Picture 1 (cartoon, one colour):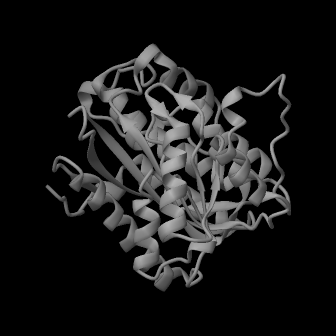
Picture 2 (cartoon, rainbow, N blue to C red; picture 1 turned 135 degrees about the vertical axis):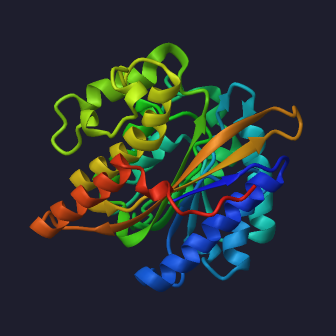
Length: 319
C-alpha cells in the first residue's frame, strides 16, 4: 500500500500522524491490540504524536516511553529539545517516561526483564550527560519492568543504514515486540545514496540469502542488465521499494515475528529553513510466530508481494 502526501509545510507531518492513528485504530479492531497499549516513540519537542494518541483515546501517558537524546547531532541540540519535551510532558503527558540518551543505548538497556541504566563514569562519558535533566529522567528506568511494546513509532528521520537497521533488528531479537501490534519506521528518500553505503550493505546482506533472492525481482526489458547494487534510478527504486522492506520482513521472521507491509510517502519540510526531503513511512503490522510450516508459507507469500510490489497497487493517493 502506498499513499503519497505531496502538500507542503507542517500539514505533511500532521497528515502522516493521522494515517498512523487510523492504522492503530484499525489494528486494535482487527488484531485485538490492547485498548491501552505500551508505546515506544521518538517524540519531538512538542510531543505531537504522543498527544494525538492520548486525545484519541488510543494510549495512556504512563504507557508511553519515548527516546530523546540530550546529545548534539549536527544542528540537533538534544539538550535543548529534551528540556522542551520535559516541560511539555509535565504539563500535558504526566507519567510518560523519557529515555534521555540514544536509541542504541535504550535497546541495549531494555533487553531483559528489567531495564538497566547505562554504565558511565566521568572519565568515559561526555559532559553533556551530567545535566539535571539527564539524571532526573534516567533514574525513572531503574528496575522498570521491560515489557514488550504493542506500538513502536521509530521516527528515525534519517536514511536507511546498517547501524539504524541493526538496532531495530536487535529490538526484535530481544523479543521486545508484543504478540501483535504495529511497527512504524520512516526513512529519508533521496539522501540514502551517498558514498554507496546503502548498496554495499544490501549486497552483503542478500548474497546467498536463505529467504530472498533479488535476481527473482521482475524487471522491465530496459533494466534486465542493470546491476541492482550500482547506483541508478532503477536500482534506487528497487532498494527503497523492495530490498529495504524485505530486509525488515526477513529479520523479523528470524526473530519470531511476521510483518505485513504498507507504505506511504510524504514531503517533510523544515518551516525555519524552507528545506524539504521526501520520507518513506513504513507501516508493519506484526504478529508473533513459531516457525511452523504455515509461518514459512506466510513469509514466502509476503516476500512475493514485496517482490512484485503488489502492496503499491490499487491504493488511493493523497495529493
